[in-house]
Amino acid sequence: MEEGMNLKLQRDIGRIKTAMFEVGFYFNGLPKTKDEKKKDLFGKGLALMANHDDAGALECFKKCLGLQVTGSEKSALLLVIGNCFCTDLRSRWFRPRWKEAHKMWEEALTCAEHAADERAQAAVFNNLGLACDTLQERDKALEFFEKSLKIKERIGDERGMAQTYSNLGDFHAFEQYKAIKFYRRALRIFKKTGDQAAIARTLTSLGRMHEVLDELDRTIHYYSSAIRIMEKIADSRGTARTCQELGWIFRGQKKWDNAAACWKKALHELQAIGDEIGALNAKLKLSFVYREQGKTEEASKLFKEWFRDMHRDRQSD
Image 1 (spheres, rainbow, N blue to C red):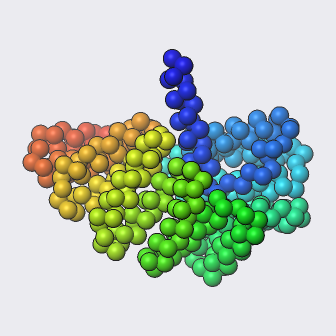
Image 2 (image 1 turned 90 degrees about the vertical axis):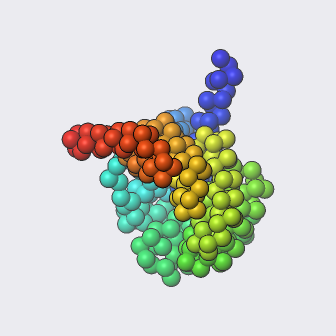
């Protein structure tokens, strides 16, 4: 019983760390506060983000912001509030609200500058770079990323440097060799710090770049390595997503058994986290693979399940 509880705790911690990395958190304010009410609200917000409930997290962070906070704490809260506008994966029709996030991050930057908090400034510059990149303001995005990286190098924030290297890899995604260079820099630091969630995501990014370059052996290697880590840290959503990407590779190579194994694992993970839309998509793809394998009965059964669930889902809408 105790062993099971410890395993659950480890998985919960892994999920929270995953969520923290994905939104580029800055934590130099609230985690060190002695105010129990602030810590409680912030902790609840983190737990909700780990469960991809960013609407609930947003409410907690706003309540915390309503308390008496320091400049650094306010900057941190405005940063994570902005993050909530961009990461709500629970809502089926969710679209990132980058302009609202951008406004929050600009205010966070002002607070960080008034507090002379360089770590906070670097974090905000990083997120402003993400927003500008998404809004097709690429010159501004690159400027923000470079400002973030410069501060992080000066203050010796290696993990923050890796975060920005990763973002620069994303920024240069259409220049694959340049992107690979940045991802490898990020990967070296993440391996040094032991951040398993970050390692897994960076391996996936490297896999995508090699896929574009049609270097599929390397793609399979990176995706498979990422999946092993994601399973270890109980990142079901990441496991499902990467299994699907690997499934497409195997399908293109007509390696039907491997493709089926990937889609089955993706389906299992998506069902486990209650992602009905993702599970429907995986179920349909798996039925196609079964058909290619000559497993007509399994393919027909799965397709009928997909059709039934899709029809039921539309009626509920």
